[in-house]
Length: 352
Ligand SMILES: Cc1cc2nc3c(=O)[nH]c(=O)nc-3n(C[C@H](O)[C@H](O)[C@H](O)COP(=O)(O)O)c2cc1C
Image (spheres, rainbow, N blue to C red):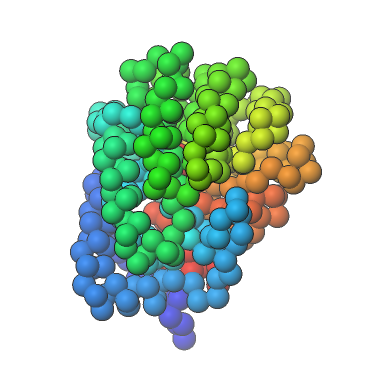
C-alpha cells in the first residue's frame, strides 16, 4: 500500500509531467506565484507547513548562526526575495537570495533556461536578472517583520552588474554588501557565474583578495559582523582551488559555497549532449554536477583539516546525495535543480 510520502511523490510526478510541457522559466514563476496564493489562505499555509516541514530536523549551529535544519535553497531560485514565507513553509532552513546587483538587470534574452530531463539537469544563462539590491533589501526588511522570519536564515548572494568593468567590480560588491547588511544573516560573494562575461576572472587570486578584504574591512566597521563566504566554480582546476583555499585561510574568510554551475558537458549522456548543444551556452546544474562538487568539498576539507566551513551544493536530489556532501565535509547543503525534479517534498525527504 502507498504511504503518504509515496502518494505525494506520485502526485508530484503527475503534476511535473504536465508542468514540463511548458517553458521552464514560465513554470518557475507560475508555480511559485500559485504557491504564494495558496499560502495567503491561512488554513492552506498551515496545511502546507504541516505537510512539508520536516518533523524531526535538528537545528544546526554554523557560522555562529542557528540554522533550523541542514537544507537550504541555493542562490538564483528566489533571486528577488519574493517567496520567502512560502519557502519556509516548504521546510527550507535557509534561502540564499540573489544574486543581487547594484542596479536592476533584465538578464539575457529568453529562452535562457532549459531542461535536460534524461540527465536530470538544467542549463541556464539567466545573466543575473534581478530587481536590484535596493528593492531586494526593502523586501527583506519587510520579511524580517513577519513571524516566518524567526524560522528562516537568509543569505545574501551578491554580484556585479554586467556593464561594470572588472577593475571596478569591488565597488558593486561594496554597494550590495552595505545595502543588504541590515537584512541578511550571511553573505556570499559570487564570482563564479558563467553567464556574466568576465566574471569568473575575478576568481584569480589578486582580484579575489581585493574584493574580499575590502568587504571584510566594511564588515569590521559595522556593529554586527556578518559571515562572509565565497561561491566558487566547479570548473576551477585542483591547483586553482588550492590557491583559493590558501587565500581564504590567509584572510580568514568564513567559508566557501561549493559549487556554482559548470561549463563542462562531458558527464552528460549522448542524448543529453545533443540537447545541451541545442540549448547553447550556459551553466549546467543537477545530477551531472554532483560528483565534481563533492570532490571539491573533499579537497577543501583535506587541505584545511576540515577547518573551513563549507556549504555543499550541486546535484542533490536525495538523502543519500546530501549525506555524500556531508561526509565529504559540508556542514550544510543547498538544492536548486533537485527541487525542480523532486518537488516540494524534497526537504522533508532529505531530512526524515
Ligand atoms: C536557473 C538557475 C539560476 C541560478 N542563478 C544563480 C545565481 O543568481 N547566483 C548563484 O550564485 N548561483 C545561481 N545558480 C546556481 C545554483 O545556486 C547552484 O549553485 C547550482 O545550480 C548547482 O546546484 P544544483 O545542482 O542543485 O542545481 C543558478 C542555478 C540555476 C539552475
